[in-house]
Image 1 (cartoon, helix red, strand yellow):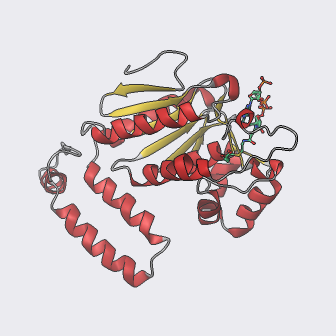
Image 2: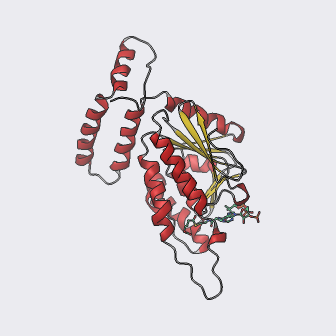
Image 3: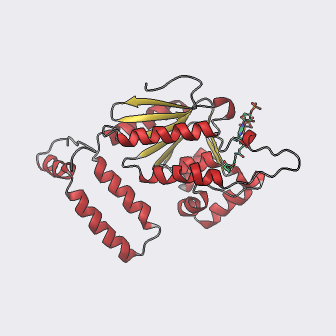
Length: 269
Ligand code: T3D
């Protein structure tokens, strides 16, 4: 455990080959305040800097995953206006960019309600696995806001325009089962096996060819904005880069020798 004091807004646990980040403001359903943003940023930077870290899990403490922005920081006094935009620039937008570009997979283990920016934080992760009692809520329209943290970009890509509009404009709860059947998330599992299943996925990634997985992330991230021609060129370039990694050579060797590969991950190229 790198840090586990209960008053810390983020808990970080180092496991073999991966880290678990727990959003830790359970009384507020792990809503974001500045301290939590700053701590999360530092935890992501640390994970990126550590070559032995080959996957990341993000989850929430208590009964929620994350309820988005802490609204108690946003209550205007009579006659005052709270102007938004700066927090997106400083925290939410860099957070999404970082999650998408981290050189290893990020798994969201959604243990309870994921609302507002908390919902879109989960959806920005590479793999989203949710417990059956979790729900996904684009709650922004309930308080007169616009989905942020990448929501207006990722929702239509995951579930299509009709469902994206329904989710964003009606701001209704979507339960985890339905989220999985709509393709919003990877998988819904029984609550009591969520952490075990999410851990198994991270263990799998911790033994995978990490540099190859990072290149897959790059290809998928780019595809939404690329023509087929541009994407074919990118695949050629990324495949070349993948072929230069020791894990590719090991993967082919292990296949030919009919044994399990021993991938070294982020080390060497
Ligand atoms: O910079 C910017 O401000 C722009 C950024 C925008 C990004 C955003 O995320 S905007 C959207 C902000 N989030 C929300 O609007 C969601 C607000 N929360 C809810 O709608 C509900 O709490 C939930 C649907 C998430 C869960 O409902 P429920 O019934 O399970 O729980 P609850 O009773 O509402 O909440 C439990 C406690 O958490 C409660 O406190 P209490 O009464 O026990 O002392 C509640 O006030 C607190 N809480 C929940 N969400 C937030 C929160 N406190 C502050 N901020 C929250 N977002």
